[in-house]
Image 1 (tube, helix red, strand yellow):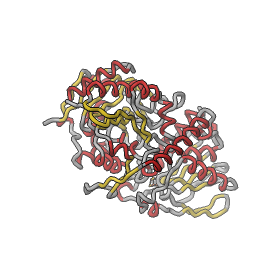
Image 2 (tube, rainbow, N blue to C red):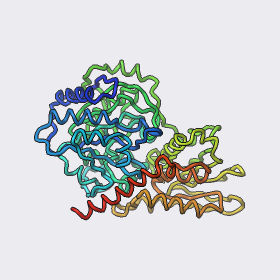
Image 3 (tube, rainbow, N blue to C red):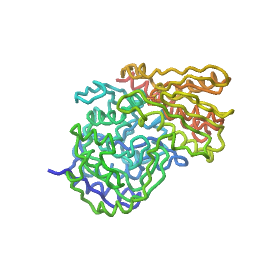
Length: 477
Ligand code: SF4
């Protein structure tokens, strides 16, 4: 029997209109949410001025809750849960995304996964990266999960649809573990551990190129289904991507999670695929290596070496280089023209051999645990050694906390220690987007969005609320 996916037209963010469409979708699939219902939007980052297109819109969330409420059976709880990205407290992003009035109106609860207790889930499929992964308790305790991704391009994985949205299930401590050349299998492992009962993708305004700072594209659709591989296969065809080029989809399909062949999918709804393909022929992606990405007009340039894993010697798609691109886009969002205004910075990643041929005033960021280089800078010997194996061997229990305040302090300390020389070594695997922002702003002598007045106070208030609530949750249960 074929899997089914529905593409429905929806031109505007109107909660009532969206509720009607999602309700009809649920009815077509025979879906009836029950018990503790958990909605998982994509709120990786939300800030109305700088990141307006990165997240599932509040009207979409509200429509999904309304539809589930109408069709639900013995529903005991409606909750919305997420762990947003780059160490920022999720409650900060929920507020910025406009979710709080929706939750109040709909009588739904916010479940911030960075405040929840985390627990191990055993994995048994042969391809798994680890024998267990950690998930927030509310995910494990829910009876019916509704996955609400945002339709976006992605600089690490090409597209983020329903499979990839599960990266936001994990707290920062576990999220960056294996977020490197193993990212695709990590996404698949999460999908082995958790299955949604229904998927509705917010493709009304889709995101192009980047995932934190996407450019809007009026796609005008809601995509619905119950199998993530089938939904993502259709999503790929909607924007002219061959499903087997979405590596995590290919792996998920090969590991039995669903199809990646359109012939195995029945596509329904009122927006024919060929019409959509014509509409999206100019949809923009960013899947460029960092050494090709920043042109001659930018004061940032990159030297990329070799990488340690056999399956991906020439590049690390899931780790530091992609984080660099996102970090530069964040800086561009806060400080237009930053590429020209910043001082010259050379970004060095991977195993690099030979001279760097630096300009006299050029700073150097040796990024990532796998990076190594020996040479001279300003007549002084510099020996950067790889600590990659040490990072790779780290167990889930040994994973670093990646707490926002600790990371800010650590990065600031590293910058201060490096102020008398023109290079800095940040040996993490993966080095986060937030760390990239710190180091680029320090070396490039430009503003630091981590301390920008538009976000500094509210993000820090949310941080301390998060710490308080997390401590309470640990004591209370
Ligand atoms: S250190 Fe960075 S670039 Fe190197 S393998 Fe890890 S994530 Fe990839």
